[in-house]
Length: 146
Image (cartoon, rainbow, N blue to C red; front, side, top):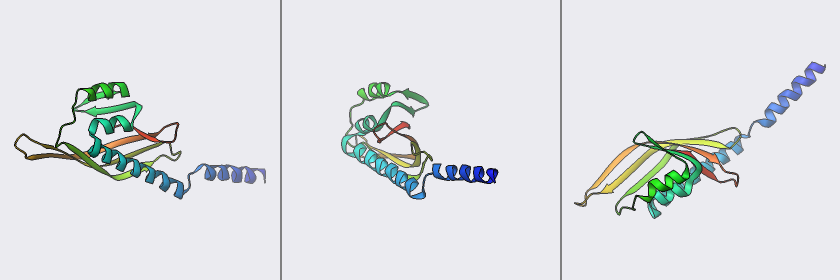
């Protein structure tokens, strides 16, 4: 009987520690909302402003096989870039997943980077992005990998 009671208690604790389906869906929606706000800010205020706003202090950004580590390094990287008129970056996640604890998440999907050249022609580059998000102490989501 004691074994049966112990098994029941262990199973009850395990079930209680699992997030409910609704909580998991709520967290996924939070990530979709923050991704949408991030993309919108990128279009309205420029890529540097958006990336600095949505990055965590311990961010890692990989571009052209080079890593930018930490928000200060990211700020320095973007300080050399002027917002270029006719440049835009848009994206939307095709997939989002959130950890059982609700403190980490990742997304991936397609992006479009466009620039208008000196002749007025739009040059576009498309690709796949992968972003890792971390819940901050204040409850907000910031990306730690892009």
